[in-house]
Image (cartoon, rainbow, N blue to C red; front, side, top):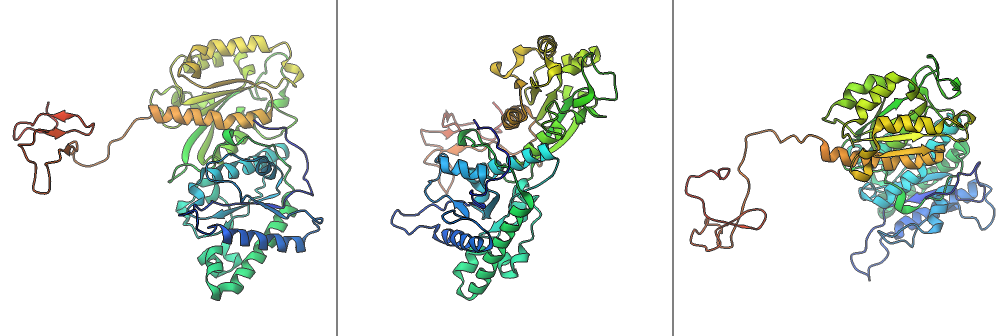
Length: 447
């Protein structure tokens, strides 16, 4: 759940949000393990106050100190993520394993995606910092894709991170230099980006930007829409269209960027490797009963005025393909949509077969998405549903190499010197059930 997006920036809000992985205490009596992170935060705030015209009483940044691992977001944290002008993730091996940090990253990064859709200008607003160096292949896609050279803050900083500079006394001067350079970078990014404030997001509905370790997961976005190079349906102007169906955006003039590109950016912030295609060109792949990736289908119901497209969508909808989620925008602020919704909804329902929706274990279909904000909230849910079904239906490939016997757990009398055949317990399989002893020489795979 989210509040409406605001416009412009807010001069009385934090310059930066420091996102870090809380370190657990080994013992309640131990000192605060994040004490040195707090030092870094306070030093950054002090420098930024000197570099800017922030009024008295306004903190330069936001750092959460009071929340324990697993707790939901307090109102102050949600507000800071919605209003901060720069997001500073503090990299460490623990950071990219933290669901909390992944949610904070996504909550901020979706503001930049929304900004790009409105203004067709790519911005980031993310200034990463090293707490402990992390290998590039240990970073998820959203972090690995950031163009940032940590060596600009000094070779010792790039090699040791802020934690090393703080703890190694002979690097004190390098710490001071790196903190100062980071403060300068934060102020510069604020001046360059001017990112609009966002919405207060509910922790329980925000996805994490960090996928499982390893390469980014594939996702295919497919568009079924009209284009302005063909004869459009009666009563439909070319305002929302371009030369290709990929250019379709039903939320114009609020946003000028193709809707498929907006969906792809949101999915990339969920650590997916995204490709975008046109339904007519992708139909054979979509009809393949063996999935190769989860997918999103963006459906322009005006396109179903074409009998040929209706027939193709019916072929797709006639089978159980839950690894492709369907999103159906319908901008009621568009005056051309008035009076056509009922007929076009019926055409879509006939083609997609509502009995196969997610309520019965089938595909996820989200109809009548009224605005770009709601669409942005729906994409992560649709991707998550598609990925879940893909994992359940994708073919499994056994490892290469010779077949080995199924491992079995022997009874307590089977020790280092071999199995005691006199044991009354016999052999135990991996479910904990008892098997009778097999005749000597019989293969474990034989009944």
